[in-house]
Length: 226
Image (cartoon, rainbow, N blue to C red; front, side):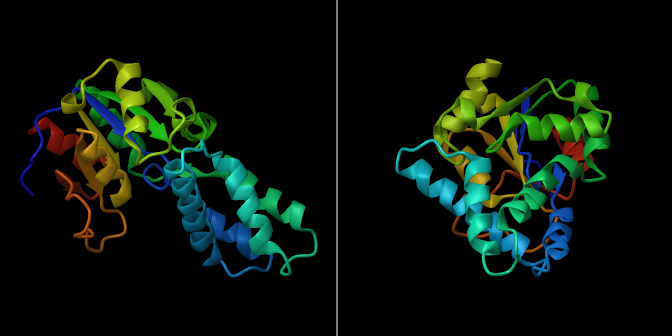
């Protein structure tokens, strides 16, 4: 599709699901005798409660919320709930990148673009993902909303990344698989690119992305043409 973005200076990448493949977490649930599809329900609930805390002025703790919700979900299904919670949560330390991520990061950097990550979780997750892939040098900075005090999609989260990098909003693009993230970035003045990994239709009630791509190499190619 035609590119609706001016060529940015800074590419801000979401981490969970955009870069990381969360599907192995399904196996962690199955190990405990819990239906694997509960992994998606749990992660969606984690985001929901984090958003609610952000809206009410609190500073959510990604891992803390995840553990609390897991405890409730696993209660009655496993004999040792604390051990089950740890089994799932430690799965984040073993996750890998989607296959297109490293080639895409290389292409973005080769095109002269600055690349950072911005996650609602800890920077340690992004750091581990890149180190396990042998690609820690492909990202300039690993940023977390923990330092902004507000989760995405609150505007303060995006402004934190812009302030740290010294780039105005109109010279940056937020890249994510999550339409809610792109909507927040749009409202904060950034360009937006939707990585449509799972296909489907972009929700019409949220601000449409400036660019839709199937993976990160396609993103790099499109931005080169902007």
